[in-house]
Amino acid sequence: MSVPALYIGSTVPYAGKTTLNVGIGLRLQKEGLNLAFMKPVGQIPFERDGQNGDEDAAYVQSVLNLDNPLDLITPILITQDFKVKAFNGQVDKKEILLEKIKKAIQKISPDKDLLLIGGTGSMFSNRYCGMDAITLINELDFKAVIIDRINHEINYDTLIMLKDSLGDRLIGVVLNAVPHSFMGEAENIFVPFLERNKIKVLGMLPQDPIMSAIRIDVLAECLGGRIVAAQRNSGRMVESFLIGTMQVDNFMTYFRRAAKQAVIVGGDRADVQLVAIEGDCSCLILTGNLYPNDIILSRAETLNIPVIIVRDDTYTVAKHMERILSRYKLRDAIKVRRAALMVSGQLDFQAMRQALRV
Image 1 (cartoon, helix red, strand yellow):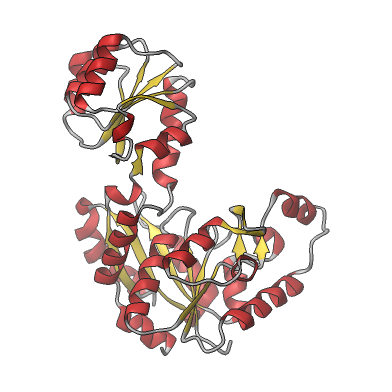
Image 2 (cartoon, helix red, strand yellow):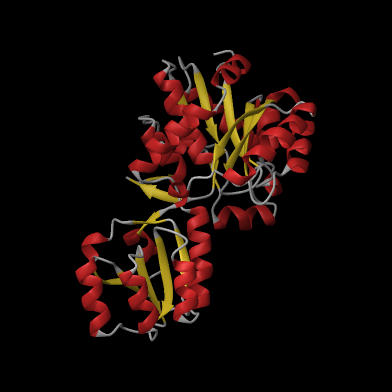
């Protein structure tokens, strides 16, 4: 590699790679580095102005104010057709695909100080076609930073395995979404443990509900629903949700514990709906394709609480909500600014730049 290259990967999908790419990229640009960005293997296909590319890659490039063609920043695009051909042994061999990535790098990185590279899925994704992160990093001589999203505990076994596979190419790891209650244990037990295993912890990003929040109008679209009240306030954010299937007294106990939450409730439960509206929920999501009564609509309009009607049952909507809030992409300007500040303030950029020699 003629230009230093930093690959941002993760132990599991949806761990925060986009957040890290944006945060690191903006900070290094602020420090005067001339960057290029690519996501060599993409799996969120979309089309823009007749070009095919990866949606996340295009978004990160736009935030970093870069303008390379989509087919160069994502030379390998995983589509359903690609998978079918791969499973039937009809795609190019690994060496040919790697050469395609190398040629793209040569075109986008002349006179650049650093090539920032976004990963896809987990470090093991796309192993079936030889395009997994471990192969790319070792074959193309990238440096790597791996982000691990805390879900009950650190994926320490996976991190140790990745260190064994990548060796000195692994600059370090970033622990993401660390709950406040877990911060002390992470600092005093897990960070020393990882560093005894020669895995440098570059930083810990605290759990931040805003980073997984979603606008109500976007949420309605994701759920296939329609907003029938207070549409003017559909830009409000939702950070969590509560299912309103319980009796009103029990519902109120749980409802008071969290702010900015959507309440998912059957369209026939006017009692819970009214309590949620009067309690200033972020929005009401009424299931079963049932229209609310006039009292509910009137109070929702008066108090500016959006009401979304969806066709699915309450359980199905709740499962959709879990996926949406855990996977919703970094799209809003407020999230970009927050990501930049969070990453800039928490990561050891000196160690990173020293390892990259930039």
